[in-house]
Amino acid sequence: MKLLALMKKEFARFFGDPKLLVTMILPGVLIYFIYSVMGSAIFGGTEPQTYAFTVYVSGESAVTRTIQSAVEENGWTAEFLAIPAEGAQTVDEAAEKVNSGEATALLVFSEGFDDAIAGGGTASVLPSADLLYNSGEDASSAFASLAGAILDAYGRTFVFTMTDSADASDIARNIVAGILPMLIVVFVFSACMSVTLESVAGEKERGTLATILVTSARRTDIALGKVLPLSCVSLIGAASSFLGVVLSLPTLMGISVDAAVAGIGALGYFLLFLLIVSVVPLIVSAIATVSTLSRTVKEASGYTSILMILLMVLSVVSAFVAGIGDWVVAVPVLNAVVALQGILTGAPVLWKCLVAFGCNLVYTALLVLVIARLFSSERVMFGK
Image (tube, rainbow, N blue to C red; front, top):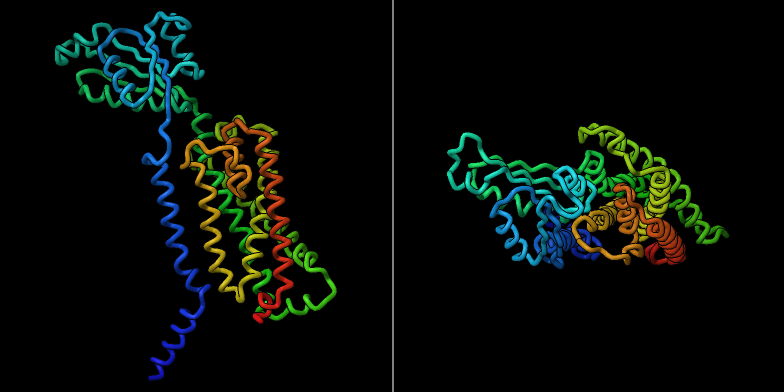
């Protein structure tokens, strides 16, 4: 009977507290939302991309007509230019066009390619087809996937090679730009959480916060007195984690340090620093707000885990949603992630970086005012 009474007491405590119920149910709702957005973006939920290909061709083959038909079936357009052609009199000149992004791809067929294929591979020298593309260009990658699949379908009666003209620094920047912003947000959040979680909830439990609140100090001063020093301490942890990631990425990906950081430049590093500086106090203020609303450190920890999921969603959403607009500069955290991606690919948009920096500071100031208002609420601070 005592066991049943104890179990009844625990069930009553859990189901009688709406906050605990929300903590248990909300992660599943967020997971459903995240996976739905990602699935819609990956598998056709967004508007299809339209491409116009410019392809240089050396040699003759009926394969080009097959590729042309496949391109049109996808709603794209393609112009096949036989070498010598305007702007590219030789194969080498056409390859330079592909390298610079002026052309989509280069197809090179060996002499008598179709006749050799029709012979079933009985020739002493196998025919060959070469496809040169640039993975740094979306259109070029799309064409390579389509043309490569068609050429593969012809079987192995000829030698087929695909060559990516993108250099190592371009590939490295794309990889870094894809994963580093998310890692920065995760490590910044971890650094902020480790020093901020007990900022208010812990003092509530110890009873020290009540002593501060009865003094003549203004509520905004108390809020700033917590957010500013915690932000400074968190910035040290965030900087340490960020440097660890940046320095280990070249070894992790098997590339040189020069390739990993090429193209960022002094301005890029300065903007990178500004964005991190703006994100840290914003996250600190958000965690401090959650801590203020919580009665215990344990409760604050549960709510903070949900907040971390939300921030991670914002940090990865730009990688899955195509065609994201300039309105993103008004979204906290997401604005910094998009700006970081531009910096890491070597193409920073200055006004986006500065607007993101300013917006995040404004959001931080608003959260400080919210914390100050919560400090004035007896129901929130003392449960009355």
